[in-house]
Image 1 (cartoon, protein in one colour):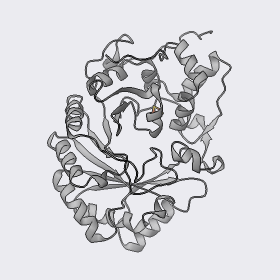
Image 2 (cartoon, rainbow, N blue to C red):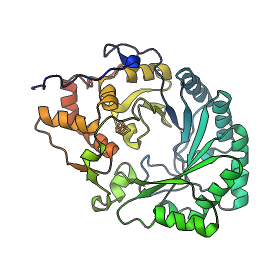
Image 3 (cartoon, rainbow, N blue to C red):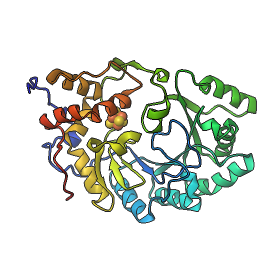
Image 4 (cartoon, rainbow, N blue to C red):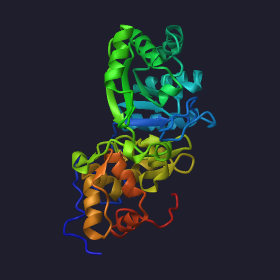
Length: 344
Ligand code: SF4
């Protein structure tokens, strides 16, 4: 394989000016995502992690303690409790928020708001969480969510959260023909007389159940040129999944993507997984150079060709990192190793 000159020069900075395999000494990261359960009372057609009522189990408090202590040691700014549906954990979620808050970490819960079917129920669930130190509520909605949860729940959760000083953010999953979007959400908040929260439309990516249920003609594709450049999430948003898997970012296909996986709780410490991520050539490339540039590199040195339109950078990333031929190229370039891993 012909490797273009200087192809693998990964920019360095003060925090990572190491040889590729050196263990980096507790490099800081920005956000820790904890998928504390894969259980969810909803069964959305586009659910990336394939959550549902059939899932069981939740993160152990011992595991939580270990990862939170490491997050503090690495100057993490915020912990995002995600799932599945974290609210399904009841009082255990309050204990989790309290454990993070007691360590000086800001806290966020990502939820589908099934629990806020009235103003009273919303207040009942949020009050103990606010007292435990909850700072932010990220609410997800979409056409599919609304087959299970009325948008009124979103409005009631927003209103109650504000009363307790919790910041609210709303992410609306959209495809080309979605009825739910910023325009309809604004109308619902105005109708209820509730101040409009910060909100964003988040295009549905064909991962997990969306891959099976959302037609490719429905996807909001755009030119890859729109997301050239470094991925700010990888290495800055490590994620612990319900089964203990540790991935470098929170994207849903990470679970099925060995190149973005750096260990498993109970097999190796969280700290050692982070060190492995920080010295991983592929992770460093994606974080500092980018995924569009990874596409260009693979196409430059092999006959593999990827499309020029994707939903977003993560969609392209998933397509590259789930392509066996592309992984073979990355292996030959020394960016990953396809040899079976042995845990330290
Ligand atoms: S671009 Fe890749 S590494 Fe970055 S957040 Fe998306 S899936 Fe993760």
